[in-house]
Image 1 (cartoon, rainbow, N blue to C red):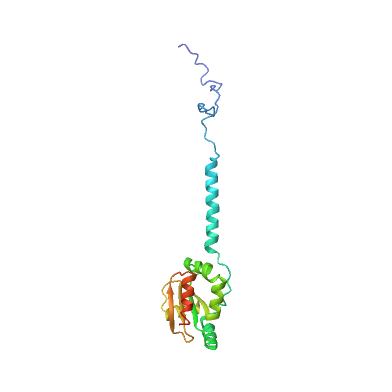
Image 2 (tube, rainbow, N blue to C red; image 1 turned 30 degrees about the vertical axis):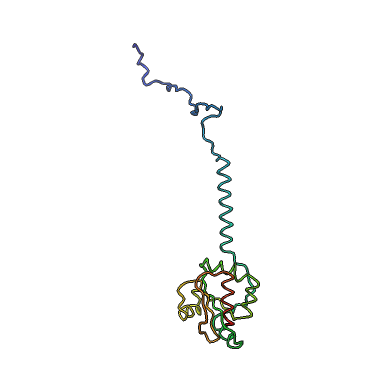
Length: 180
């Protein structure tokens, strides 16, 4: 323990062993134990499929094809037209956010046979919740939710109605009720 302390502090910095990145012990198949930043192909396919299916569902939910129904601009013009032609009015109460309404527009009103039957039998008007003239009609016919389909005579007296989403067959039965 005989040290020379005449050169304290030491003039040269102490040397440390060179550092190297830590390595993991090899695994039985020869690969290192490091985790790869790349995901497993299964997860890539899974998330890509999920994304594609989600986008397809979103498109389908909001897609409403055009139809051949001659919708009146508003309830006032529908009343005038119904009085002139002596046809009943078909009131379809809807809302932009209403998914069952979109389904009816896509599945019922886009059918050419249904559109022809509507145009021949009644004066149709689509009444949106929140429209200035629409709110009055919602109150008058006591519509609490959408979709609601009401068939009236030219003067506005209710002949028949359907609450909720209805299919083509039920809708055609409603229209056939005009002749009864």
